[in-house]
Length: 253
Image (cartoon, rainbow, N blue to C red; front, side, top):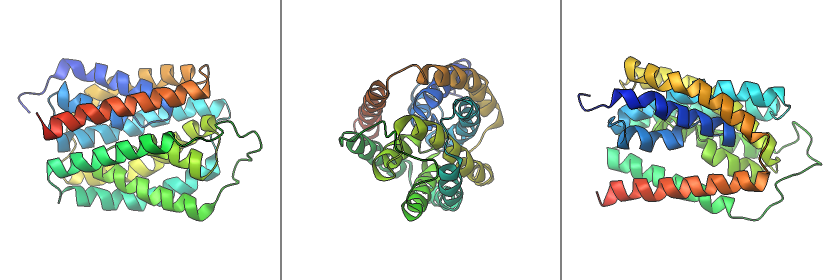
């Protein structure tokens, strides 16, 4: 804790919040490497901080997207409630894993999300009706992503986006807004468990979320102005940068 760089934490929250609003991420996927590399926060403590950030940033960004009609609440409730059970399970499992094991799981999930995003599909499905999706597939996705939320402290939006787009056939813009709803629901349940196992520090968390709200609002505004193909490309590039950066630190640094 004595090596933690406190002044940079609001800026890290700002970056995570911006990506949350822009791409429908909870922001945890970018927050983890930023907190550990630049903030010098221990990995397991960073997962707890990231989880609280995910809730604040997701709630802020979801409000903006919902106001623009880009949230499917039926999908959000189905996947979000399914994710609660997975989130609690993942949180308690995280105590059993060594840090390098958690980092390896994180890397595997990131590259999986990138591979799914390269599968060609129509990003704008104008025939889609809200609430019209495969319920069993949705619950399965919610359980799986919820487990990752608890295990790694990331909201899972970086995986939800491609899974909902490619397997539930939901248009990308609605997927971005709805993923924030799912992340919010599934992450809230995991926060109590993270606090119980000692993975949340109040001061660090407050500093991070002080920048989250502003970033989430601005990112949500820009998300409505950018073409969907460009949004997908931003997500792919971001995930690849994270994969190589975290991979290098995990196995070579």
